[in-house]
Image (cartoon, rainbow, N blue to C red; front, side, top):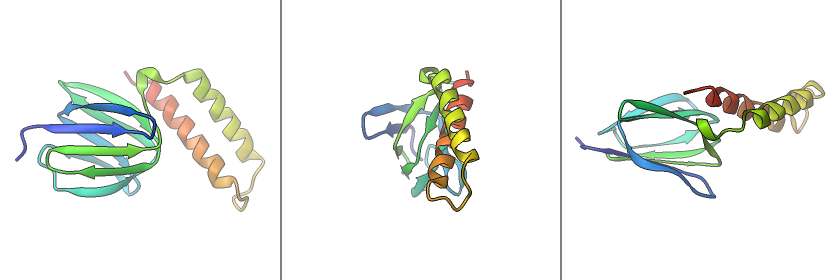
Length: 135
C-alpha cells in the first residue's frame, strides 16, 4: 500500500492544486466517490460539483466543472475545465450568474436547443455559491 497520496487539480489555464492529501472526494458523473491512499486504479468522468480533500485534518473545497480523473495507488489527477477554491470565489458574481441562468431558463422549454447550456450554467453558479459558503 502506498504511503502518500498526491492530488493534482489541473485546468487548461493552470495547476489549481498540487500536494499530498489524506483523502479526496470527487463529483463523478455516476456519483460522488472518495479516494484514499492505495486506491485501485481507475479512470472516471468528473461532473460539475464540489471536490474536497483533507490535508492535515483540514478540509479544502473546490467548485469544479466537467472533466476527467485518473486514480492510481499514489496519485489522483483531476483534469477539469475550471476549478475554484472556496475562498477565491466571487459570490456576488456567482449570484448574478445564477440569476441570469434562471431568467434564461424561465423563457425556454426543455426542447430548446440552448436549454442544456442554460441548465449547466445554473448548476455551475449554484455549485460556486455552495462552495463559497464552505469554511
